Length: 124
Image 1 (tube, rainbow, N blue to C red):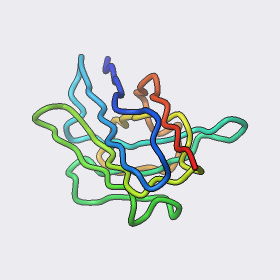
Image 2 (image 1 turned 90 degrees about the vertical axis):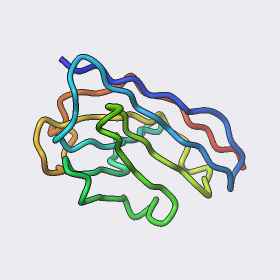
Image 3 (image 1 turned 45 degrees about the horizontal axis):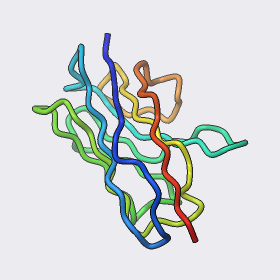
Image 4 (image 1 turned 180 degrees about the vertical axis):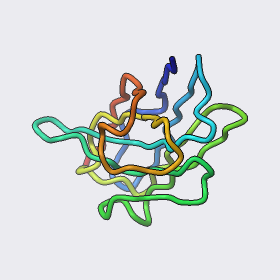
């Protein structure tokens, strides 16, 4: 089993930055695709960013392209989401997740392990 724990969320003004971290324990996610998702009240969970098992391929939702950067450090079993130029519409609970395959998938069902979520609130 893999346990994922997010950190780094909080309250920030529009235009500010936050860096989310997600530490894995119990099982390494090395070689697996991992990603960040978010869910705002009344909305479905959406994939924000993902990175393949080898780190060579990445995905970003159109709404965050050019502002967010996903990265991974398999030696530390930790993934990151650097969020710059934050907007009020980025307000949501952010979740990290790990698949058990190398390639990224768009489906939330493709990710087996999930963190508990961290709140990000962007004030205008």
